[in-house]
Amino acid sequence: MSFGTRGLELEQAPSLDLPVRFFLTAPLFVTAAGLLFAWDGEALLASRWTPAALAVVHLLTVGFLGQVMCGALLQMLPVVAGAPVPRVRLVGSWVHLLLSFGGATLAWGLWRGGEIILAIGGALSALGFLFLLGPVSVALIRARGTPHTVRAMRIAVGALAVTVLLGLLLTSALTGWVEVPNLVLWADIHAGTGLMGWVGILILGIAFQVVPMFYVTRPYPQALRKWLAPVIITATGVGALSWLTHSHLTGVLLFGVAIAGFVLFAAATMRLLSLPGRRRAEATRLHWWTAMSMICVAGTAWALSAPAQLVGVLLLVGVGVGLPTGMLLKILPFLSWFHLQHLQMASGRLDVRVPYMQGFISERFARFHLALHLSTLAILATAVMLPGLALVGGVLLCLSGLVLEVILLMSVLRYSRVALSLKTTMVPSSAEPG
Figure (cartoon, rainbow, N blue to C red):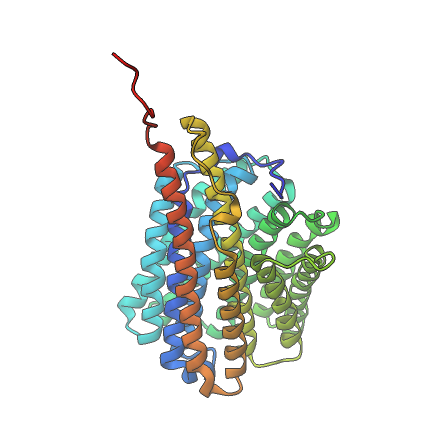
C-alpha cells in the first residue's frame, strides 16, 4: 500500500452503503445545474441575484456539496475522530432523504418562484442539516482523534448551524413571512458563512488528514494546522458583525483575512503535492492542484473587484465541484478496498482476489472526466464576459455530472461483485467418497 492509515480507527467505520448513497446522489445535482445553465445561462450570468443564478448556487451547495460533505462527515468522524455518530444509519437515511428532496425543491422554488414550493424546499433542506447537527455534535464532543482535524470539524459544524439559521431567515423573507432589512447584506453573510465557515473549514480538516495519507506527503505545517481554522472563522464572524454594524471597510478587511487564509492553505497544499521528478500525476492529484489554483485565482479576482459572477464560477465550479470530485475518486476506492478486506477476513474467503484501490476506478476514465471538468470551467469563466458560451458551458457541466455518476457507479458495481463472491460459500472441488 502506498499510503498510511496510522491513527485511523477503521473498524468503527459505518457500512459502505451509507456514504455511497450520498456520493451517488451528489453528481445528479451537478447535472441539474448544467441543464439550468444550458437553458437559462445568459440570464443566469447577468447577475448573481437572478432566479436562475440562485437556483444553480443552491443546486451546487445544498445539492452537490451538501450530499458530499454530509456523507464524508458521517464516514470520517468514526474513522478520524474515533467518535461514531449515534444511530448513524437512521441519521444518514433521514439526512440523505431530506437533503435530496429539499435541495431539488429549494432550487425549483428559487428558479420558478412560488412561496409554497420555496418554503417547503427551505424547510426540508434545513431539517436535513439540523437532523445531522445533533448526532454529529454529540460525536464531536466525544471525539478523541487527530486534534487539528477534530477542531476544524467542530468549527465547520458550528458554521453550518449559523448558515442554516440564516438560510431559514432568508427563505422566510422571500416568502413574505418576515420583513428583513438589508436583505442583500444578510444573503452575503449567509453565503460567506456557508462557503468559508462550513464547506471551507471542513475541507481544511479533511485535507489535514487525507492529503498526507493518500498522497504520501509530509504533514501540513504545525502552525497552519493549529491556527488557520480558528483565524478564518474569527475573521469571518467578526467581519459579518462589522458589516451588520455598518463598518463596511472593517468587514471587507476581515473577509480579506479569511480569504488570504484559504490562499495560504492552497499554496501549502500545492507545495505538498509537488511531484518529484517526471512521475505522471494521477487525476485525483490534478483535481487538488486545479482546485487549489482556483482558490488563488478567485482570491485575486475578489481583491481586484472582478465581477461576482466570475468569482462565483471559480469557487462553485472550480473548487466546489472540482475538489469534492477529486476526493470522491480517491475516497470511494479506499472505502471499497477497506470494506472488502474486512469482509474477506470475516468470511475466510482468501481464494477471492480483492482489487487494489486503483482497480475500482479506471485512471483513463478519471482523466477523461478531469479534461471535461477543466473544459467546463474554462468555458463558464469565459461566458461571464461572452454570455453566448453559457449554453456550451451548461452542456459540458451536465456531461461532467453524468460522467462522474457513471464512474462512481462502476466503482460501486465492482465492489458489489467482489462482495457477493466473498459472501458466497465456497463449493468443494470434489466430493469425498461415501
